[in-house]
Image 1 (cartoon, helix red, strand yellow):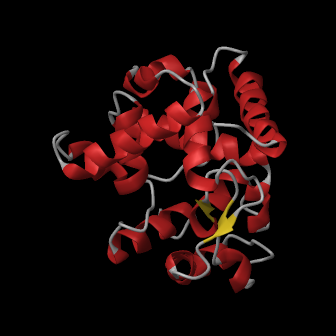
Image 2 (image 1 turned 135 degrees about the vertical axis):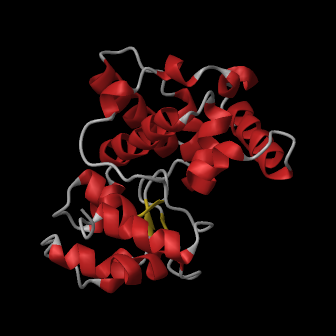
Length: 218
């Protein structure tokens, strides 16, 4: 796959961020592949405004965002979007960057890489063994780790992951490696949600998650 200069720059930003917080020990390649899948390696990518998933998440999280003191809490259009390299949904992920920040902070490649890597840590803490497990955790939350590996949902994500690794010229078995090899433990600093929100999370579960993230529950 021939990469545009802007895509090369995005990959370098991910690499630099991983190196900065892991003392050069972290392997950024899987994050490269995930960013390729999620945004085409476009730090300025905006999504989700049309299908309403982020808007619904904002409706659930709005009161918590307001009570947390975020000065942009009522900017509905800004919160009803997914941002950046990893298409992070603003209502859930902005707090991990900065509870007082405008959602557009997630367009910063360094910020989005740190937030995405915290998700990797959360997956590992929940029992993810390899990057395939991480993908399931990202898509379904902790319950994704209980989905059998012969399930079509697992197989489709394995194929997708390997396809994006191939496009970047990376070894296809990279996603099979133990998650500990990523050496991303330094990313696990700061507030983190108790589960990973997705479009496939139930409404009730998402409401509780939003409340936890924005401090509405103890």
